[in-house]
Picture 1: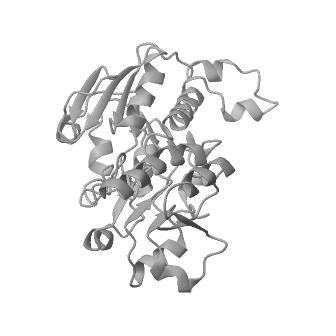
Picture 2 (picture 1 turned 30 degrees about the vertical axis):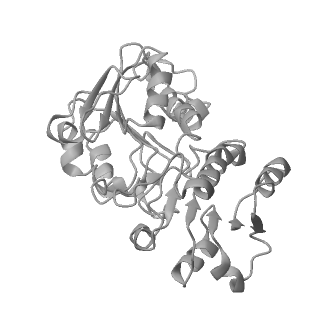
Length: 315
């Protein structure tokens, strides 16, 4: 079995893989196009992987480094009967920490413009009306999987009441309440923070549009650590301009890199980060804990053990 390795592995991980029967690792730096038709497994997606899949191949399994898989040619992979596993579960803590950081920046005025203005630095009265505490605040977490549950846990420790959103409203431990996507669109509950962590599918594209923002009770802060195209950027900007949304923290964007001409660069009370909220210090270890049991299961049973992606649903 030939495995194309498109990410850094630790030496002990390489040893563990090579101890499996009939496994041959091909490092991305050693790969040549002539090898494409010999690859059985791809560890981490990149342009080389895309080129392999667009040509005649016999790839059986692709392991991604990300939770979202919208960048993959899902329909083509389904037609080729390729198994795909995502890396859901390894980014939860880091994304939750990022979300908490965004929220604290909003509620404690940590990045207020006056904080860098020597002429107005001590005008505390200008800041006090912006500052609030977290106990009793409400967070609407759109996406109640592993990441959403981790975010909920972190916020609940600080007294925030959390409502999770999933497709059908089925109960999930770790939230104060769960509602369905249909309920969200029909009558969203009042929230101080709306946090998007949904994968990108046909159903979630531009989920957050003019209608969504205008129907929100109150003036929530909007945080997107899911996928950029879930948000109609023009609609969000309009909601910010009229105060329907109090502020936004965006780690992902409809167009990446975010164009220099985007009004978001100058929009007040907007935090921008360059798609880094899920960064972990040792991604290899997290991905390997998913990839190795999946590889063993593939070799033994022809199936995946964990994190199998439903290619029809896109997650």
